[in-house]
Each structure stands twice: as C-alpha cells, then as structure tokens.
Image 1 (tube, rainbow, N blue to C red):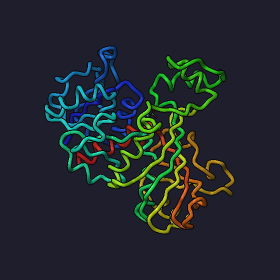
Image 2: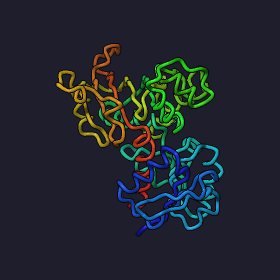
Image 3: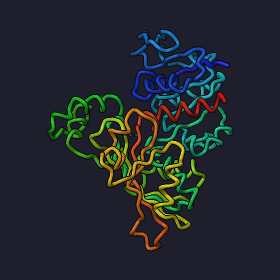
Image 4: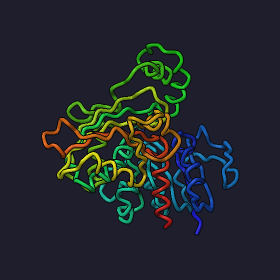
Length: 340
Ligand code: 2RA
C-alpha cells in the first residue's frame, strides 16, 4: 500500500528533515503534499517523489491525506490537526499542543510503541530533550526501576528554530556580548560566547515550561505516574545536538557495569564510554559527533557517589541530534509503525 503524506511546516528545520527521513526510512509515499505558511506557497521543491509545489496550509489541504507529519507550532497544530483527523488523516504532531491530552499517545518507539494503537487520530511526538534523555534512561529503568531523575540539559540553538541556528552560525566567530535578545541576531550574538539558563517561560515553582516537560512527558511515555524529575535547561552555543547530564535514582541495585551492558544493547543507543581511548571521539559523546545522525550517544557512565544507597544511583552523559531523533526521525518512525 502507498500513502498520501502531508508535511505541515515543510520549510522549517524539522519539516525539511522530515522529508529527508521519509526517504531514508523508505516510507511508502504514494503522493506527497508540502504545506507551509502563505509566504512559502508556490515555491517548488524537488523531492524523491517528484517536484512538489508548496501550498498554504488550510483544512481542505487534508482531503485524501492518509498521514500528516506536523512540524508546525502549537497554534497551527490546534487549528489544523483536528480538521485533518476529521478528513480521515492520522497526524503525528511534533508540537506541544496535544502531548499531555488524554487519548493522545505520546510515543518514543524504543519505549512505548504499543501506545500507538490507542490513538484517536493524533499521536504526539515528545519534546526533543525528552526523547534524547529517555532513550538511554529506559533500558536502565527496565533493569532497576527509575524513581527520580536529576537532569541538566545543554540545548542547541536549533531548538530555537532556524533563525536562531542560522544567526548562531553567522555569529560564532564574532564573539561578543549581544544585547537583549528580541531578534535572532541579538539572540545569536548573546549565545555565541555565552550560556542562557532559561528555555521557555516560568511554569512551576521557578521551573520553566521546557524543564517541566521531562517530568510531565516522561511520566506518560514510561507509564510512571510517580516519576520525579528535577531538570535545568540551558541554551548553549552548539548548532543542532542537545546534550544532557542525567543522574537516576533506582528502586533496585544496579552497578555501572550492568548499566553499560544494558546501554550497549539498547535500541537507539550508541555507548561511547572509554576515558582511556586514544581518540576523543571514542572517549565521550560530543554534540558535533552526534549531529546529523539518529543514535543517542551515551558515556561518562558511573555510580552516583552522592546517593546514600551505594548501588541505587547512576550518572551518565548523552548527546543526540535535536532535529533528527529529537524531532523528525522519531515522528517518521511513528508514522512507519502506523503503516506496519
Ligand atoms: C528547544 N525543545 O530546544 C525546545 C523546542 N525545540 O528550544
């Protein structure tokens, strides 16, 4: 069977990557529609399925569409995706709009692919930092039962969208203190030689919306309603991979050796953990190494020596491509499961 697929937000960083992932994952595309803002309507895009003319996204665009890959912001998602479902499509939505809604599965295929079956037309793609942190957390949870997570993220400029990414690229050599950050240029100037310890707005007791996603989404994806997560999200001068330092507290004993063994065998994970290695690329994960590929690299695996229970804590470092596995690749993997 072949499918009529529509990408909403087709000209953004994630939408563009989704198109590439459809080809890489050999998705059975019969017809492809590229939907974007009116500003982009009429532009022609060469694709593996022929030349496609970008259309301004509107409800009638979804007539005859089987699968929608949503790479648009929350407001567009809320306005359009129920319309798409009404016209018979299944939507895999990368926005935050429906992630926590009852009846909307929130899916990382390596963790809870079975949840897809309960969809009512919309399946939500988790936040990038959630996906990148949970892919390596899940195999350790299966081994020893995760109770609590303490996480610091180091998130790439790409998470702030194409303008921030392009400006950072332009500014990286021009080290200097940017002004306040009303524009991508000012944001990039500030970021080019600095760290910004806030992503999203204040949400709960001084934690930001981005920081609360890991707990809220992690509870739903791993089916752990009691999971507790203390997360600090930081924007760093890196282009497209997010990095995370994660400490886990467990119900049962787990040694670093057991953790390494589980991670080495885990789907979606590449273990890079040898401080004695000759090459830096083999010692630890680095965002430049994980960019433009789909695995989550994990390293610096060690016992949490601050945990009073000797074998109930593991700390590790991981990096993953925010645009790929953090968004587009995960969404296309979900869509592929819909066809199987
Ligand atoms: C960020 N996770 O990194 C958010 C949205 N992509 O900014």
